[in-house]
Length: 549
Image (cartoon, rainbow, N blue to C red; front, side, top):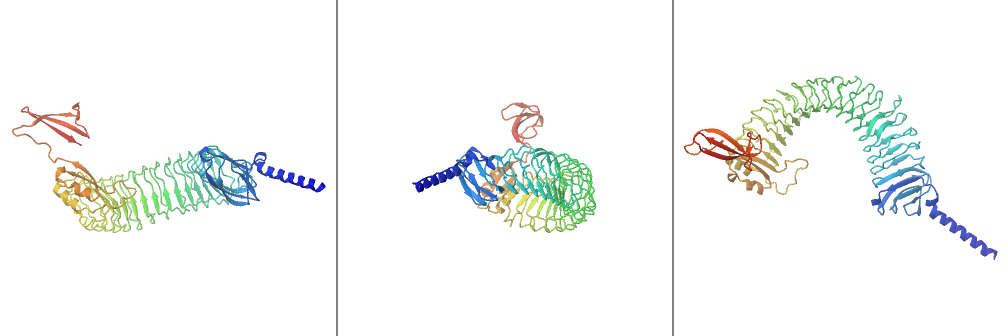
């Protein structure tokens, strides 16, 4: 009898323990709670968890599953809330449509990876041991309190909606911080003399100032698209890359002790700049400023230069023997000498006032844009590597391409060409010849020489792939169909070549009247478009013509 009673009591005890295990999710306070989007319920998830001991997870159905202390847990979300029980040191939950994350019971977290979710509020101030925070691409809209997080080494909170002030000044071990694409108005960085910070990215915020002075180990600073008017670079002896484009910078001074290799100050308000201390500079990007002069004599290591959209009337690259890329379009240059830059492979000098350009000493020239200048001739016979030629909107009467067998694009519209020899151009994929003086019979020779592009993959990232555009006098006389059979997409611009055709015995035009295609009278001749012109002559006769501009 006594033995039977013991068995009954033992069974009751076991049942009680089992019941407690199953129902613990309802009675114990979880260390963390994930609230999922309704659409994510009943979908599989993979959560990486590490704890000081074994831990349990309630996947949303009130039932606990027990796991070892370090494990990637794969299961289905069975309800909107998933609850975690244990002493966690690492949580990884990436791209799972989590909308809320309560981590109030996780003071010992070392590493938190929760990027690409929909989290709107995040509190980590109690995680005093944390060394890595990765919460990019969420919807976080609260100010971040890092008052207890002085052990952080890496912060990635990019692409959120974090406002106001972010204070990282107490983080002596911080090496990298990325808070780009937020709404920050102030960012405080550690200033201790032993600071190990090497990488700061605060692009696309609302900063009017940033103090980086004395960060002697800082290697890269990216503060583009803010409201900065200047940057003090004092003490940045290790800085190699500075991205400060799209700001309101009017002045900037560079310390003599520097290692700057790349400088991007494009889209600012610079009227002048002194680059003398930057002996190691290889990449310079100053486009879209207000520069009227620029001395690059001390910067002999430059390989990439972009100074487009300024007010430069003179420019010299004689001190840059390693120059590979020069973009100087949209300035006021009347001359440009690149004869000493034998390694140049990319040259953009469109929209200037150049009357000639010598590229005979640039055999590696690959991408050449000299459009919208005042050229009457262009010699590219010494440029066998050329792929892309843009020489539109000049006054070029002839163009010899016999030495350029690798051409992919020829944009020579708006010139004075009468013919163009394309024999052997098997790589050609784009041809623009409209508004020249090419007769229809010459157009047919050009079409006959076009390569067959059927079956070729479109060139990615360009709008001109397999495009043929030309002007002709009579569409019926041009072998458009032959080009189309070769796979070319043809755009035809009709030009009569004759201003007017007078009937026999007619006299001079004394009056012109303009109408739209609906017959309504216009006050003046249209600047562009399709319209009708009625010419009235002194003998009373009239002629109506359709015009296009």
